[in-house]
Length: 410
Image (cartoon, rainbow, N blue to C red):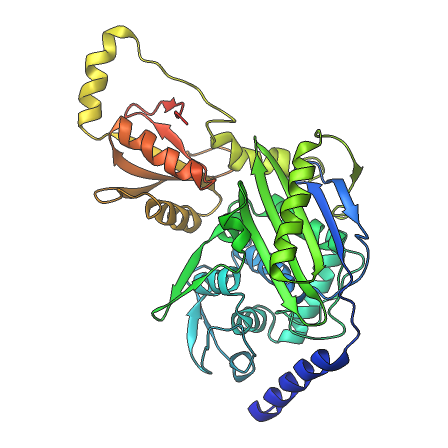
């Protein structure tokens, strides 16, 4: 398809939706417990609507899956086609023939909701955007998203691109459950590319305590959509709002829903449909994710190591030698551990003189997890760095020079 024809079709689709496409834009919402999948509250959660850019959640799901399976790498460069470059905004403004890393594609989608980046991923992963859309729909069915059909990778207007609040909650939970090592992307505040810095469209992250993602979406026919995740007192909730009248009212509605849901006791509600073909069974969030992430948290596994009195002098010597470190997670891929450690290093105000280190899994250990650490701290510096990361809802554990895990003072 020629570039001119592609542009004409995109413009025609936008005009079609602006002037009278099927106007779903029906308000619906749902809040679930991320650990159990139970519905805490819902309003018309099975009403069908256009997902808009929440479509990109599935685009990223399949990208994370390809990374986990070793089919692609974060540093791999994908080529931009004329079709991808011709997408309407929001976009990075990629040019035909240009190459861009998977790393930058992920960040541009999470922060700027770049439509051209979504198509670049689709075409390079599946050969074409239509082929990728079929793959997206098949994955949706596998996850139990029974009322969803994907027609493109971006969420740009297409009458065949439909879903429900319940289905999107299932997808948001699957992202957290299946890819705990990649979920941090959704908390990214901004991203710079070719000298331009793009801020995350989810402005609620700046004002709602505990929120760490995940995605906004809007087209005229859908209204204002939001899938969000927040943590309080170790409990994570996932909410979806569709058909909001404005970005502000959608955000306020989400905040009110999450506040009400957090006020309810855990364990109430009904079960959300889950992946019917999963072979993990109960070995989902509670076991897999918590083994990989929460078990590293001082909340989940705070083994205070108070040295005996006769070792106080030695401890002070070690402190002066800057032998303390902080661990920010354990990951199935070395590259991911390096990348997350690098990001967290630059979240620490006093990061000069620090460096990152990845500890390889010991021979014969199960899980084969790579532990990302930031090193060269004093004890007080390590504690301060962890407090900074905790305020951003990042995982952080302090380690003494002798390798002992130490409880973090919050």
